[in-house]
Length: 230
View 1 (cartoon, rainbow, N blue to C red):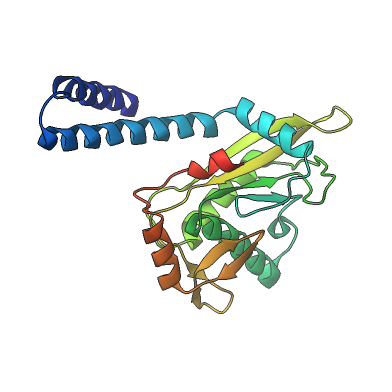
View 2: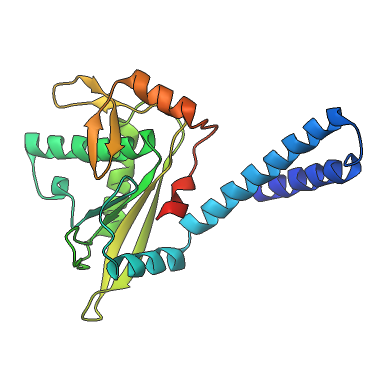
């Protein structure tokens, strides 16, 4: 349905671009605006196609495994998540931690979390068990704890890749959009905080500074523009 609407809008926009190309400055404004609509729609669908492509992710992981690229403001590797191996209050702390990492990416420029691969170079593919179950658990966790947004801003990809012994391992990739909204959550003491990704870590930031950052970046909608920087 969305793709059909996209094609209709695109055809409509191209019609006006061609029809009014020789008119006055007033119509030049309209033409430029319609071009921007096409570019934004094309960019959106291109990003969606990339995010949903297992081939893209396998190729990217292969490149990262063969490079010395360290964790950055767009990239985070996790051998596993501690929340899967703890209970009680400690488990709650670990849940808040991963939610903070995800919200921190969204409050900056977006990013990916790769689970099932060690973060120390040279990296090793170790994989995780029960991926689909854990995927659903994380999706519900983010929805329940991360506040400030009503739409989905994360996408999950379950991929199978070979380790150095040619054994296929299951890994999970969480792709986090750069959001228009400022995201926040409660810490262990039930106090609200606003995380943001800084380098390879997460810090708590003044929401007004995050708001200014998003304003300066002219974010119009949730996007995955960071993918070109991986």
